[in-house]
Structures are given as structure tokens and as C-alpha cells.
Length: 301
Ligand SMILES: Nc1ncnc2c1ncn2[C@@H]1O[C@H](COP(=O)(O)OP(=O)(O)OP(=O)(O)O)[C@@H](O)[C@H]1O
Image 1 (spheres, protein in one colour):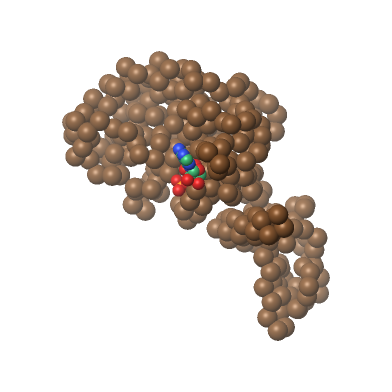
Image 2: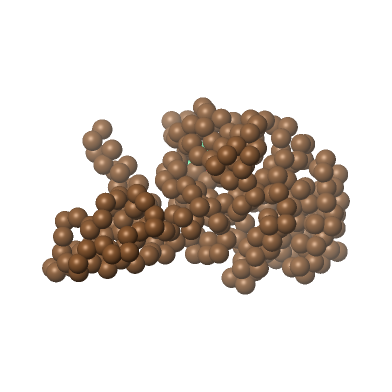
């Protein structure tokens, strides 16, 4: 990745709350103009990481760069307009109408694109004259999203934006987000702990396991690196690589392996078959492998 194409870079970012480390030595680079899925179990540190990237929270150590510059308070949408964050609780004023919320967005952001905010609401048929307190959970999420998009951020951070949406709305929102990203310079980071929400959304993955990056990269490239090998019972898979999952029966063995090189070898060994794994399976095997590694370290300590 050259510097031009990096939207967000974390350099050894750690965050401690009291005695507990929410993030530990997080270093990664995320490409510009993509949708990045930030995935991790409950408590993995997703919200903490997003708050640090947005400049709302200061890391205990390390630094975050957005478009090559250190993040500071003034970078956020509402003051500087480079980074917008839509937090889980989606703050809306109950007595404001939807149109009032857009006026509020215009008055609190240095850059404001009324057309962009309006067209998002129109696409999802959210009535402009309705008070926010009377909107459904999904409609509230759309209003908060419209206000965030209206600020024209370079980096839009969405903390579990799909949680309140029904499956159809989820599908539509993710499709529209892809269109918004394709037609602009915006980079979107979207967090979720529901892996099935991801299908077709994130084209880049940042997987957090207990506060550490476990897997980072282009989703298609990562999937091409992961294969399941099935063959006669054996202690080792028929190819080199990192073993993520092993299952044995009396006569058969199955290994999920992260290969050092892609593409995977077309012919592996006599009696063995190789098949790709799903995104869900890849994520779950990595999270389980990182949990096992942590437990081993705790036992050794
Ligand atoms: N303000 C805080 N004070 C103390 N501990 C905190 C605070 N915020 C988060 N934590 C702890 O830090 C860890 C990471 O929390 P965080 O909210 O970032 O995780 P998450 O991945 O977003 O979780 P979820 O998917 O449940 O929203 C958790 O153990 C949480 O309890």
C-alpha cells in the first residue's frame, strides 16, 4: 500500500481503562475509498478503536494517522469535517423533526451537503416532518446516517449501523453505502459482531480479537489464502501453512489452513481434496485460534 492510498494507520495503539487493556499494540493500515468491516466479539475493542480514530478518545500509547496526519480534536466532523463517527446510541433530539435534524447538521458542520442528506432520507422514505421521537428504530438509524453523510467526511466511522435494521433494510443500506463510497473519496469503517451482516459489504476486513488485530486485509485476497483440506487421517495437512482448525475421524482428517502463498496449489497430494471456506468460517476459525493462543499464554504465565 503506498502512502497515498492509506486512509487510516494505527501505530502501536493501546488503550487501558483502569487495570484493563481494551486495545493492545494495534498496528495496521487501512486503504482509502473502501468499506472496511471492523469485526470482533462483544468487548473486543471495536467502539474503543473507533473513538480513538475519530479523535474522541486519546490512546494510552501509540498514534493514529488519518490521511497521513495525526488525529486531533479539531479533525472531527462538526469542527473540522475530516472524520465523522456515528456512535451506537445514535444521538437524535426527540422533539426535533427530521428536517430540524438536517438544519442542526448544517449549523454544526463546517461542510454540509444538504442534497446528499436529503437524498439518503428520500431513498429510505423517511418523512421529513416527523419528530425523531416518533420514528422507528430503523428510521432513526437512517436519520443519523443522513446527518453523518451530509457532513461529507473523508472517513465515516459507523458503530454497528445495521443493528436496528431488518434484513431488507440492511441489504439496502449496505448497497447504498457501497454506492456512496464508489462515487466519492470517502472511506467507511463499519463495525459489527454479527458476521452474517457482512455478506457483500466490507471489501476490507479488520478482525479484532480481545483488543488485538487478528486478521487484516482485502477480503477476497484473504479468502483465497484460506482452504479446507480433507484426506486420509494424518497429523499434518498436505501443504505448508498456519493450521487454524483440525478435525479427525478414525479414517479421515480435515484441516483449515492459512496458506503462505496464493493461489493455492491446484493439486495437493494423492487422496486429498481442497476447497475454499466461507467468510464466516474464516472469521470464526481465526477468533477461536486467537482465543486458544491467549489461553495458552495465560497458562504459561
Ligand atoms: N469507559 C470505559 N471504562 C471502562 N471499561 C471500558 C470502557 N469502555 C469500554 N470498556 C471495556 O473495554 C473493552 C472493550 O470495549 P468496547 O466497547 O470497545 O468493545 P466492543 O468490541 O465495541 O464491544 P461490543 O460489541 O459489545 O459493543 C470491554 O471489556 C469494555 O468493558
